Length: 415
Length: 222
Image 1 (cartoon, rainbow over the protein chains, first blue to last red):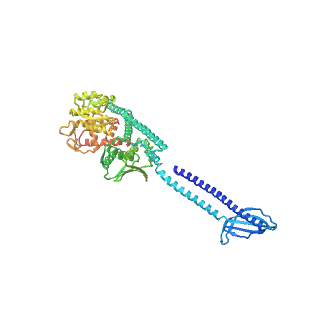
Image 2: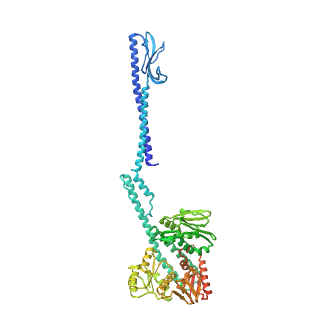
């Protein structure tokens, strides 16, 4: 629930309640005042009757005037108390009953006790109350409409800076190049929020840049010692005869150094892609690069008895050739790595998308796989391949998707 | 000439190159390198870009300004495309990213030297084997022998590194690049080498390729 809606609903509830209570108070106050007035009229009538009796020693004629009736009834020995009552009033010439107010009293005429009943119609009072009720309802309705309109207006104008800040916060990524821009506003709270956001984004980006810079520099610095080890190994190899044991050891060292090199290269490459340091887009045909890439992997596929089915069409893109090569190489390598002997790889390149399908045993959790250094148990890779693929795709606005269908891994790149 | 500030690497390269049929000189920093290229001419300068007291790129500029035709091979830890392009634009012949195998370096240098000393013929001769570099075809005793792309590339690699033990890792990286890490073993290298040997021997050439202690191979005249 939006803050404003919440605020509004409370506001409206309180307002409506207040108006209702006011209406009720009005009702009682006005009906009390009006009843009092009627009661006075009734007493006046009673007094007139008393005066008449005192003068004439007889009951006056029963008469009926506008909204008023007086009736007498012999009481006998019965005593009655003088009191006001609410009752109904029936106009003589009309059928329907109206609310009325009556005064019951008694008078002695020639030693005989009579009951006096003076009734007056309350129809006007009722009418007044009805009007008050209608006005209250109207005011509530107008208030609701006004608050709703105000809500919209405020949402559109006053809250605008807040939503702008929120949108920036949602779209914030430390890897993004564009800085978070300040949102101008005259409202203090939003100003503070905006300043806090800009400051925070700046800090986060700065930290992130430092971290990336560190990764890049560290990888860089590592390259030199690795090349020394590599060259020393090559030199060592020329020196003399080796025993089987020594050769085995040397082979292992070679393998490890090679692995270290690849790891380092991948980290450097990733840092560079993220820093946008790889430029030089050119127009190229993905099919040619893919064919070369498949040729490169031919022997490895053969050694694992993997069948390749390819269906390639021309596809021109404008991108860095290096990155496209890396992307395709990584995807093909993965298709080989997460496969089994005697498996199959299908490569399908169309104008809209490239799909690489390979037989496999178990689905990946794609969210996990895209994390750095995530490796499945049987994988001997370094766990950066797909992260790099994702980065390359993001760079060029390609969509990298993954599905696991019929025991097959399907990676697709939508152009 | 080798221009490289890292002593370990410089010595290894020097040791690897010296002794075959080449003479090596070294320079450890920019001033020493500049002094040497001003006086002597080299078939090929192996040049590190990040040097003490100067940038390697300026040495290429110096060479070109003075119209010296020395071959230049850049070796750099920076795998940045910009450096590579600037270097090649300035007139460097090739670019190799650290770390590399000495055998790879040797084969690249050999290619540059071949191009520089290109004297009308584009033929590389090794005893009875002759290779036409522009047509990428191989002849043994005048008879053409068909090689696949990979076999041809491997043969050139071996000839450039003749007399040296070339590790399987170096061969694998030369032919397959980074994708080699998905291979469980290097058995398919063996099958390529077996094919080359078979084709050469069948065409009447001697069997030059020897396996070396299960670690690599050696292309040798002996």
